[in-house]
Length: 460
Image 1 (spheres, rainbow, N blue to C red):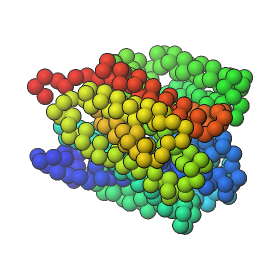
Image 2: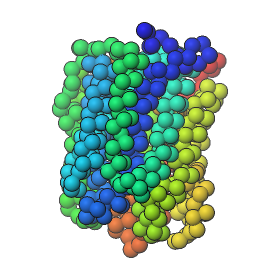
Image 3: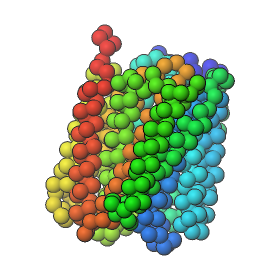
Image 4: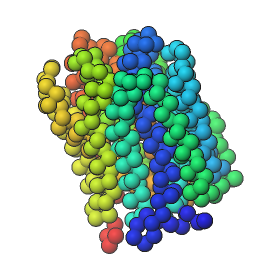
């Protein structure tokens, strides 16, 4: 059955590939958001420090971000469907290991393996949608629904995490992945067509090593800044080595016969700018969710379930915004949606920062909703921008680049937010400072989007 020929739309609806791909992506994003309300409880039960709590969250994201380029390169070389299925298998098994973790160190290690599975899943998800839905209108709709799946997972995560932690315990936060992973694997094998292979594409292991080293050094330094201070020699050394690793990657890509990311791929305004936009809006959104979760539980005394409900205005809006932007982009093009989304999210976080030291929760509902809506509203357009700029045969690499920068943004947002909470005199000051930093990131993304996201083609 040639599923790759079908498109979602009036001209021929086949939702099988979309459902299969989105099931895997749902699982990955659910694991990002479901953990936020659980980590304070996990930290208490496993006697973890604040730095340990950050590593439970960021250990996953660090490996996820570091190996996304490897996952994209493997998908282009060996076939995206095959690598996607490998990722689902690794993710599901490591989730079981997380559920059985006896110590903080074991849980962090299992979370890192989980991140490796996610790094194999996500590049293939966009590449498989690109393959299955080749027409521009159908592809935009598919990307919008892919983004809305992130919204559904983000919406379900805090509520589901709070409910599980409050009833059957935090270990079920990971056990829930087992049936989802099994269903995703079965659906993918049945509904998604085999992907072409590019046997001539060798893996550039020195470049991959430089990416992993750079991401690990950067996030490690940001995490340790909360415990050691920003002027600590180890923190400064880590940041400096991360810059050197990035420079080594750039030099290697210019010299390599088969680079993971050809310089021509990065020289385009749409590709490189879209990737940076992804980094900035993930920095703002996930930094906000992490710090707000800790503040609600430590400062306001909310339970895990109450925290999930408190975050609902932010995460629930992501689902609605993704679907809406997927429909509007065919009329307006991507640029106005990305710019508007970033401005709205910036307004939301700026409103929280200006709300005072101990605002009533009712005053935070609108800022939460604005941040969630704006972030997700911009996701479809930025995704389309990056994937549309990818040359033939590099859809996996383009997807990996976009999602690598997004996950670096997520990890940096959590790390910076946690460090601000740890280094300021009280949670309120650290929280407001983090929101102000996130608002600046969103504003920067809005300016960048106006410059690099192409306008709607004439006659399209």
